[in-house]
Amino acid sequence: MSKHVVVALGPVDAGTVGPVLGERVTFVTDPTPDDLAVAEGAIVRADQHVDEDFLQRTPRLRVIARTGVGVDLVDLAAASARGIPVVITPNSGSRAVAEGVLAMALHLTKRLQPLTELVRAGSWAERSTVPVGDLDGATMGIVGYGRIGRRVGELAAAFGMRSLAHDPYSPVPSELACGDLGELVESSDVLTLHAPLTEGTRHLVNKELLARVKPGTILINCGRGGLLDPDATLAALESGRLAGVGLDVFDPEPALYHPLFDHPEVVLTPHLMGMTRRAMTLTFRDAARGVADALAGREPAAVANPDWNHRKATA
Image (cartoon, rainbow, N blue to C red; front, side, top):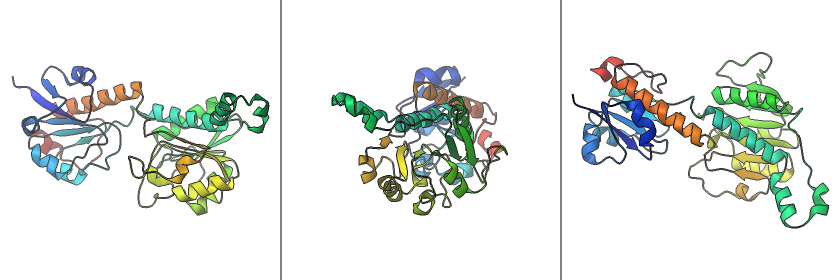
């Protein structure tokens, strides 16, 4: 019985995906053009392009699995036209990203960086000059109440925080719902962004919205880089309206330098909050499971292009 060939685009741990794919699959971590020509499945890291050229080089392809949920670099229309499902892994990194949000909130609220510098400089007597805040009793404002937003709310509750959420697309429990984004901003001590990036949400956090935050607010973006205007964000920091900013995502990526990066109350991470050791293992497993399902004629659990033709893909 011939084996299915599944290829990797970008680094994928063969030891994790191999057992999920099963014995009938040959997994190729560094595919040649000949491997691509016979590949029936692909596990693709989120920074890899899947375009018409790639699809032309993979004429036997039946399934694409992305590590994560972003499909900005995938030609979904071309995949759908070929009957190829684009599998995503929405559940694997959600908890890790939410932990990243709370890590940034704690870092900025507890002023860890300036306090570290104070101790290093031998300036113990000046410790009272660095005000330290609290999450207990504060309000977490969640913009986008999907999987990650909900988990942020759960973690915030464990710190004694009250949560409010705004999401025009997904249902929010009545006790948390804030239908007006401006009102949410005015009520929040920590504002965290988890909305999808669309034409309507690009620079959602802009000069006008930031004018409504209460002084001392912390802003965290672990969603999409384009959700905030960096110039307006820097101005809000310099005026004291924002007390701190945490960024894990940027527009574009890799990040291009912006003066915001130099502000002492900014913490930066290179889009890694959802890529912890455990999260990456879960992501690889979920991606491999989606590929195995498609090759077996089963519909994968999470697909980014719902208009793909299941019958065509399994023909």
